[in-house]
Each structure stands twice: as structure tokens, then as C-alpha cells.
Image (cartoon, rainbow, N blue to C red; front, side, top):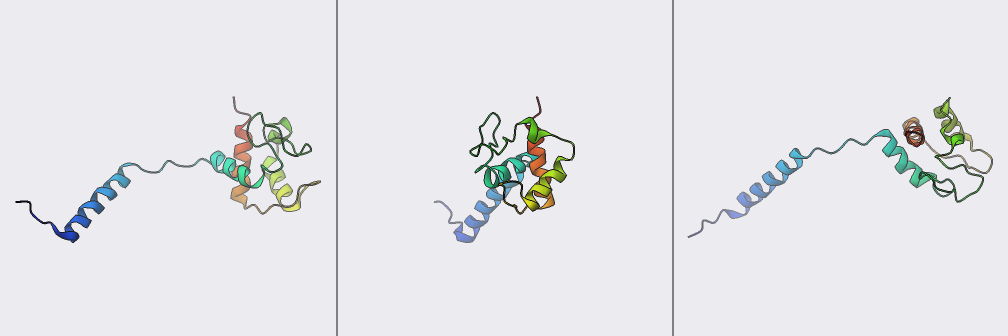
Length: 113
């Protein structure tokens, strides 16, 4: 005859299995470029092409993969200034310094071979 383990024992067993499954597969670290891509999708894609080879919805907004956007000398400062002050038709955008670094990492990754 099967033994009745009871609800507390069953819950403990299920919890133990669930916790061991979580412990064996640690989350993959998210790179700054990946965070920058996500940010670009949310905050920039209405005007800029954020995917490689894309065409910007607004003609005057450069694509993220363009040489103009990938200009690396002072890019982080430029992104921070543009976000804070806007530029031509671009309104100011709230970005933390970490967001600006992540966005720059994504833009620079587009120039990688």
C-alpha cells in the first residue's frame, strides 16, 4: 500500500527540485551592448534604424550602423549631450550615464567585423 507523504512533505519535495533546477542554470550575463540594443529598440527606433543595414523611419535621423553614428572619438559624451539637449528635431531623452554607456557599446558593436 502506498504511503501518504502529506501535503507538507510533497511541497518540500517540489520546492527542493525547483530550487536545484534554478541553481544548476545560472542566468547568462547581459552585455552592455545587449542592454544598449534593448534601449535603442525602446527609445530610439521610432526615428533611427537601430538594426544593422536598416533605414531610419525619419530620413534625417542617421542609422545606428552609419559611420556618422559609429564615430568613436567622444561618442559617449556626444550621446549624453544629445540625450540631454536634443539635436535638430530630436527631443531630449532621459538617459542615465549607464544607459549612455550601454547605447555607445551597442553602436560601437555595429562596426565590429
